[in-house]
Length: 293
Length: 241
Image (cartoon, rainbow over all chains, first blue to last red; front, side, top):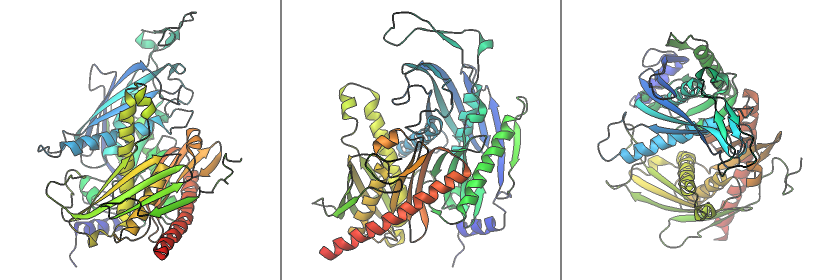
């Protein structure tokens, strides 16, 4: 029987060595740069190995979602047409792929439909006037190159952007007349009075590839093509799981007693990754992550 | 805490499945009713793959010789009131929901089909959700799997699916729309018992490691129970014919 690329990869994972020499629990080098786009309120350029994503965030006052009158709103758009060869026939599927990625990242930040608490703002800090005005973030992401772990990279970029945006303080004017768009709100213009979202609450995606009873972090593109079983967990800095999504179509997870280990591995990865990122000074921006088994 | 319709926390709604409900051209079809969630699924194919066929996947890794599955979900009755009253976002929200459901349906069903017995073919599944009272993805998956089974496509196993929600502090299985609207966390999963595989999982909420594992276990157990029921319906339809 011929040895396929998949067999070679599986044999490598069993021996704790991957194509590029990494161990199963090793991430590629992650680089995060904030403030790359001058006129955006928050921006970030994130690189995981060769996967590069540029994200820009803007802030405005808008209407809250239905059924969630007090939570802030996050809208995400993803453009991945730059990183794939577009030869005139496949652009529609890349467009759709971008929309799917965007809706997955949006779900991470907007939380479940029925929840009364927002994911980003548990005390409803993003609410200006209940049911009428809330802070709305719009994050535009461009994928510059895709070498696997795209969802991880996108969520890291969005997180860096969100934590970079300065949110002004506001005052609601007490008047007897309430206009059609709600009560009048004055925005504090002093930039020194701006506050920022707490990084620790903003979750990030961690993707795991599953092989027999082992798991692998940070798959590159070639590995994604070989890996049949993928799970992506959205975790925040305290290790709480906010979202779980199974990998691309055709993949499935063997449900065995190993699942508890996999869940634990994902939470551990999320905690370590986010604590390393959050504890680094603004000047330094190069990290190499190795998460213990 | 009692649920509104008197069910226990881990009780699913009664299931009714019937095959061959669509005439004219479909290889197989099924109608599923889960209390007030009603779904019709029709299966077309396997057809030989032509050059102009719509490619679902993108970039490298497209398998030109394999089987292709195309799942489309229609929500004809949802959001009509909102569209009439002039809300701009309503129809795009519905289209997006249709696309998301289609993607989730494909993800759940594809691993159950014996793809190497259908090379270079294209299979199409059209699902119409007539009425949704919570757990529409679960209903679509079970009904689609039943339709595939009755249409003679070679399968590894039936796929069953269930949705769980956390209402208050209690975990409820197969929530209604009202229960979903108040839930703090929801999880949907699709499970294939013969291989012990979870084909699709989508969870949104707030869990610790231990509570997530417990909820997944509860989901898988509910799927196993549902599988026995669907298998019984399948055997019954074959026998009555």
